[in-house]
Amino acid sequence: EAQVTQNPRYLITVTGKKLTVTCSQNMNHEYMSWYRQDPGLGLRQIYYSMNVEVTDKGDVPEGYKVSRKEKRNFPLILESPSPNQTSLYFCASSLSVGPAGEQYFGPGTRLTVT
Amino acid sequence: AQKITQTQPGMFVQEKEAVTLDCTYDTSDPSYGLFWYKQPSSGEMIFLIYQGSYDQQNATEGRYSLNFQKARKSANLVISASQLGDSAMYFCAMKGGSQGNLIFGKGTKLSVKP
Image (cartoon, rainbow over all chains, first blue to last red; front, side):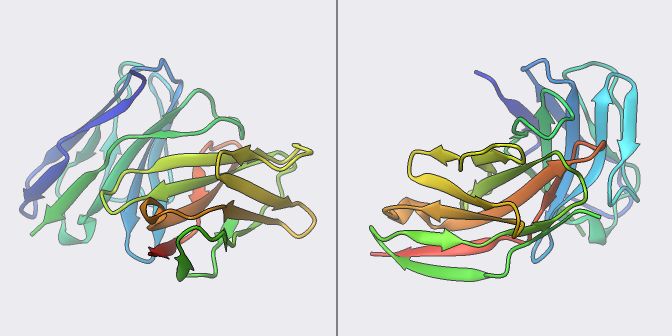
């Protein structure tokens, strides 16, 4: 089954404790992206990757890191989480960068930083 | 800059009736894609329908249709014969430019009444 998987689905952590949210897709997609969703703000892009070893900042990259060492994986790293990073996070992938073609979303990771 | 506007924070519709969710967009790109996603209370993002900027006909997918008016820069979602399971948040999104990301509106919460 074609899908995007994320782990963990739920995470409660404390300020400053490094964490990684994994993302993997099995569709051989070139493009992968991370979004965060906050009430009243919709979804905003954090980082994206157009291919292996190619990553770039989205609209809200501060406090986050990513890597793309393999085509299928795109982990999101919070080196020193803060309470303002409490949010619902989505990983997404699509076949290409172009305007056509949907982005497939993972199930989401609900992160709480205390 | 690209922008999506959804002016209806919340809407009610009677079961079995049709409902239109509004979406207007702004972009200077000649080539772009418009998408609608559904987010039920469980949190996942479900792709509903896609419209390309050069498509001559309005997109349809089962009970969903997209009323695309290019000159007015609107891409309204029409749900026919509403069902209780249609109660959810609905997001309009646009994809264009070189970054490949989806720009989301803030969403409309649809509630279907029995």
